[in-house]
Length: 120
Length: 149
Image (cartoon, rainbow over the protein chains, first blue to last red):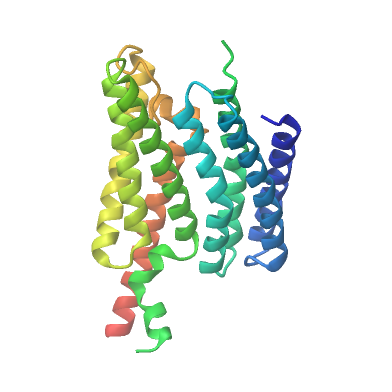
């Protein structure tokens, strides 16, 4: 795993989460800046997923391969899924959904890290 | 029938506003518990069939709750109410069992130790779910009596 990329994703994700939480409390719906932020986050996530898939194709396979792949699929789909949610719910609860997603994204990355290089 | 008619139908309110967030959280938990549980059942069934089976069961309950909350209609609301209640009972019973006896669930499930491995979200979620369903139900009932009389 690319450590600095993981760190960056986690930081950006948490920053997005806090920002969206503030928007929720300020009674704002999901706006264009939120979408741009999610787009950046999604690009970072896709890069990480791409790097890991390339590593797996290259032969660097973790023991729990199926689990890792399903986690990778989940983190790749989460940002667009919550953006769709934000479009459906044009109230402060749109950013609330994004905030929740951005809080669990770092947790999922930690899980992938654990599966990728288990501490024996 | 105009759009306004559809959106103003009271049964739709369960999935809008805070309901939308609940559906999202339930969907994530449904995915997490079912995927993890069925993978463990498939690969390590003999180690802890009860715990893994319970994970899958919890996942299915979350899934039913998510669908119940996401769909409009009174039947869905009942479905949501029942599944969220099952979830509440599940997290309390399994949580208590895992605290009192360590042998019953050797492997962790979503509900073990009141969901401590999942930041206690499994414990808080059914409370919020029940609160939301009852709130919408009350609002509906008041609105219903208002408009028919």
